[in-house]
Length: 302
Image 1 (spheres, rainbow, N blue to C red):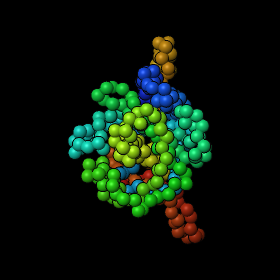
Image 2: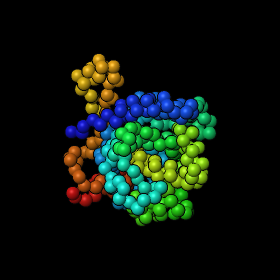
Image 3: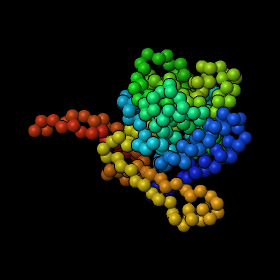
Image 4: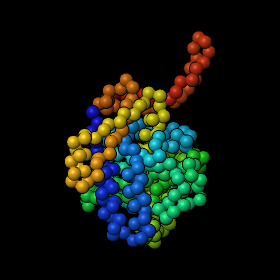
């Protein structure tokens, strides 16, 4: 049985404390994230957030697949990477062993108010909130990605950043050369920090750094969306123990949030092998043809 991680509740506490000492606009951004975390439906994912084999390039699916199943979702997962084993660069990962991929249906609102650039309901926002092991605190990445529902796949982009990530071992060659879904828009959450990063590294390099900071959480969310779109995947909600939450309320703390997990039909919970997506397709039979929905399938044995 999947155990609760309670990352979202702990991140709320850290971000509320963090906001007190931030400059004005970043304080708004931090509180904006706290509001989203409080509204979020929580899902607990497997370690590293990987639901689907990453040995292959991601399938090109409609961006509409990335619409969240609830207005706000928080995907919690542990990340036990080989921190520090890569060739060191500004794109290297650091020790952040707990992660939250926070995604919400774009409502046309920013920390500072309404934003008319993108119509409400026409994009999905994805933010990364990570636990830094060295300081033992939850901290948000300074901006969120906005994936428009009419985004296109780009096949002619220079390899640039992807080649550097390939050389660092963060992606493989198939992923490096695969078409990329365009993500031209970001939602700045911590403006003062964003300005400092841009002043130090320049605009282009700061955007490349943002892309690598968001990469793991975007991948986890993409896995999640592809999984829940499959016909043999269902969700199961688990309530937190009443006794535990009563004790927390008595102590003046917020109760822990209930959480969801994913279940793949006919697959044991302790399965350790890779999973893939069998795309939807037409199947011939004696009476003609029928449509078969996409399914999650075993790719190999443990």
